[in-house]
Amino acid sequence: MRKISVIGAGYLGAVHAAVLASEGHEVTAVDTDAARVSGLSACDPPFYEPGLAQLLTQVLRTGRLRFTTNVEEVAACDVHFICVGTPQRHGALAAETSYLFGAATALAGVMHPESLVVGKSTVPVGTAARLASILQETLERPVRLMWNPEFLREGFAIHDTRHPDRLVYGVAEGGAEEDVALLDEVYGAQLDNGVVRLVMDWATAELVKVAANSFLATKISFINAMAEICEAVGGDVVKLADAIGRDDRIGQRFLSSGLGFGGGCLPKDIRAFRARAEELGTAHTLDFLAAVDDVNTRRRARVVELALKACGGALEGRRVAVLGAAFKPESDDIRDSPALDVAQQVRRLGAHVAVHDPKAAASAKAVAPELSYADSVVGACAGADVVLHLTEWQEYLRLDPSDLVRLVRRPNVIDARNRLDAARWRAAGWNYQALGRPSA
Image (tube, rainbow, N blue to C red; front, side, top):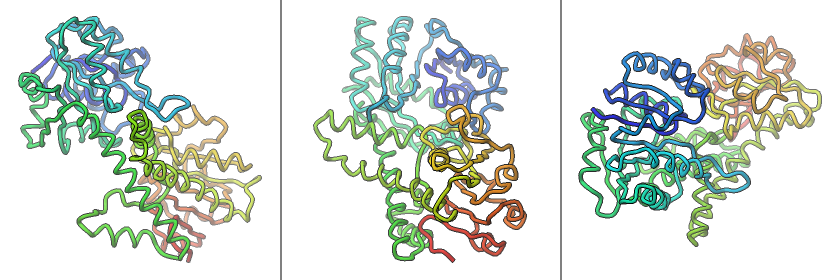
C-alpha cells in the first residue's frame, strides 16, 4: 500500500480519496477551502453523493484518510493525484485551468522529485505537456507525470471509482515502465477485478474524456432533435427511441429524450473542446457540437412554451410548481441545471414559482433566491396552475396523481423528462403533456 495525496477535495477528489483509503492506501487530501476540509473531516461533505458520508465515517476512523489545507503535509507521498476543477472560463467557452496550474505549482514546491504526479482533472488536450514543463522548471529535473482521466457519474461515483469500465493511463513518450507499475499498484483492487487498463500517450488520454462526453452529449441532443420532429408530425419519441435503441450499433443508453443535459461536465466540456479546437486551427471539425449545444438549450425553451400554453398564453400571476432543481436525480448539483433554468425563465415571465427538490433546494436557493422553495411536493403544488416535472427523482415517479390533483388549481402537468406514467396521470384527470409525445 502507498502514501497518496489528492490535490483538490471537491466532488472528484473527495470520492477518489475516500475510495483509495478504503482499499488500504494512506491518503491525504488537500484543499484550499477550509470549510470544505472541516466538513469532510467531520463526515459531512458539502455536496450530496449517495453513500459518501457513510464511506467517510468508515475510513476516517481507520486513520488512513485525512483532509488538510496544508500542502506541505503531502511531501512524503509516493503518488499525487491532481483532482481540481476546470470550470468554464467566465465570458468564454474555454476551460479555466488556472486552478490546475496553481495546484501543480504549490505541489512542486513540496513534493520529493521521485514521486509520481497523476492528473485526473478534465483538461484541454495539450495540458499535460504544459504541466510537465511547469513542474520540471521547479524540480529542475524531468518530472514523472501520467494522465488518468476520471469517468464518474454523479449519483454513482463510489461505484464508478471502485468498478470503472476502463482505466486510462496517459504516459510521456517512451513512458517509464516503473510509473505504469506504480499506478497499477494504486489500482490493484480494480485490476484484480478484471478492469481493462489502456496505456496511451498524454494527448490521447486527455482526449478520451472530452471525446466521450461529446459523444454522449451528441446522442442526447440527437434524440431530442427527433423529439422536435415528433412534435411536428404527431409522433412519439419514446417509442422511436425504444425502436432505434434496439439496434446493437446504437444502444438504448443516453437515448432518453426530455429536458436535456446539464451539470458540471457535459455542457462545459463540449464548449471547452470547441474552444481548444479553435486554438488548434481545427474549429470546423467540431462545428456539430455547437448544434448539439443549441438543441439542448431549445428543450428548455420548449418547456416554457408548454407552460405558457397550459396557462392560456400568459404566466403573469400564475402559480407554477417545479418538481426538481438538480440537473439529475441523486445529486444536489445545480450547475447549468436545465430544471433551475426553466424555473427562472418561468419566474421572469411573471409566474409565482414554488420549487421542490429532495436534495438540491439549498444549493438552488443560494444561486436563485428569487424563487420560492417548498419543503414538500404538497407545498409546491398547492394551488398550482401547472406542475412542471423537471428532475426525475424516484419520489416524483411514485407520486399518486389522484391525490395530487385535489391540491392544484388547474390539473396541468408537463413531464419534461418523459418518465411519469402518462395513462395513470390522465386517468386521474390531469392534462398531461410531454416533450416529443402526442397529446391525448
